[in-house]
Length: 398
Ligand SMILES: O=P(O)(O)OC[C@H]1O[C@](O)(COP(=O)(O)O)[C@@H](O)[C@@H]1O
Image (cartoon, rainbow, N blue to C red):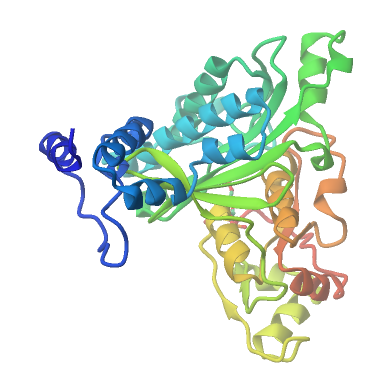
């Protein structure tokens, strides 16, 4: 079938959002015209059509298109089990992306979750969207068949899924959910460890806890998904940090930021500075100094604070600088470890103001700590002020 007939057939059944101009590119990839999740079929069609019309340019363009997340894992020789697991995580996150963008969720975000009344000490009361996102991830991990245990910020205890699952997943299913009502970006954070087979003889509850309390140095992979103007999945398997952008017309995460490197120094600091008067002297001095351009970098820094960890971290990864929450608020297992792993794999640092995050042995599942992430030179300068952890934590209303 000639290429023109394939295109018009597809167009008749699916009218895509308007595509960006393609003046200096070959005709749009046929995959962009097909319904979600059908990119591989589009790829086959394009190959057939190109062969039929002997259109070598189209075939070359198809071969040169950036890989999807799963293609990237295949090219990198990723373990088959891990690829299956990541495929399930990405499909859960596509559902969460649709959920946070759906009408009616502003109202949902104001409501209290059904199970919210009885949350254990140290955990915040979840919102319905937190619980829905948690359910989506749990059911996806169950159906992957690859996960022994899931530890989620939304559950008091880890959930044992299957005895022979090779992996342990830790997650904050929907970080920043307090922002949903005003459509500010949110995110999912996850970390993947190997199941510790040497603990298989222990009682289930103990086994689940100990598997979930592995130190960040043992992460096999970690990532986040940012739900913003673009939906971006950023992941590291321990060999660089790579980000993939969701192409809504095909349902595929496409490699858009290979081998991300945090600039060694940025010019942005990110913190809730309404807390200035609760900060220790060292942190106040550091921020005062860089604001005035009197630090090691002779430029005045700018402030940016979304108050949504994934968004603040994503910006820091790309522009550099430091993103911090100096009080005991963010969680070591679900947030600090995965994001520090990504930061280090991109050439940056993650610390609690004194110690490397990945080297801290978690002792409690919902353990909180101060978190500083960012460019190596900025982080070293910050840490040189010594006294940067906020000990006063009165509990803020907003
Ligand atoms: O109130 P603070 O100290 O500015 O904390 C804001 C931080 O809390 C978070 O909302 C996470 O807290 P929750 O997990 O309780 O939602 C982050 O997204 C954000 O970076």
